[in-house]
Image (cartoon, rainbow, N blue to C red):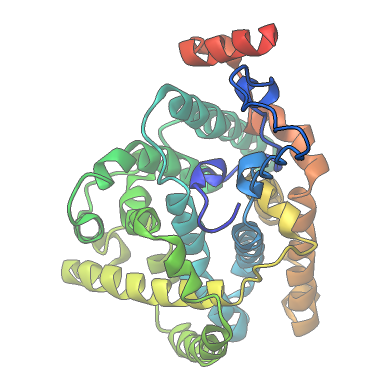
Length: 400
């Protein structure tokens, strides 16, 4: 899809492969009110060719590329986590990546949620594409932990997301609130105020990882209010050049902060008091981290290619890779894969990074998407009422 096209075909993270739009019945059948034939001696005027946007739905390669590169960094960040205690460089990379990889994902999610109107079809996709995978993977992760971590009594709790499933719970809530953010006059300041209040409220609790839902929410709202021209501001050579010193500075700051700062600030799952910090620091850190994250996200977008590449097709499978790689990420801890000393040496750290990239790439491929589509994008037509307008269109199509 071009940048100026409507966003509804790319509005949600677990995107299906690009499909050609089904022509409407009126477009397929000859018109009964066709123009009169041309006078004798004159060739009839040839019909105007349809624009690409009219004949097929197209995905914007930039956003698919951005999602793949972001999920690649997510997997690498998870792979670096056990290495941080032995390597200050790994810790610096970890902090830098955690500053912007999930914010980038969430901003893109918000951008493609702009067309969400809480209509029946949108709600149906919300249930089948987010709520159902949340339930399936929450249960699957629980049984995996019982087996792999030798913890047979670990409880199933849909109110307490385990590991990666918090993002699905958050995305479900953010999507439902989209009409509110499209209505209020100053959505981003309001979302930031809510995030600040969450960061200084230790009694929110762990249900549905509400701290993360509220503290990450400004990025989703930012995506809702962004327009194609805002992305074009960073998609140029000048922005790419400026991004280099910004990233270099971020790495130097992270290298300095690694032994001095609690990395849990970047998870946004706790209040300031729960991190043994004074309450006022929650407000300061929320605003400071938001500014740093937005800056690094802009730099990240500047380096995302806009053309179709070999990994563009993988952008449609990022949620598959995200949820499936969690089994290996957690299993590597349960099964002691990081215990050998060589893993914590420079070559071992490089090998771990490369392996994480290969695994997440494989998990985003179309064969994996087809194999797990029953869990990630179930149709579940039996569970929903038939839309009257859609039924009428199907009847009209069958007559033609």
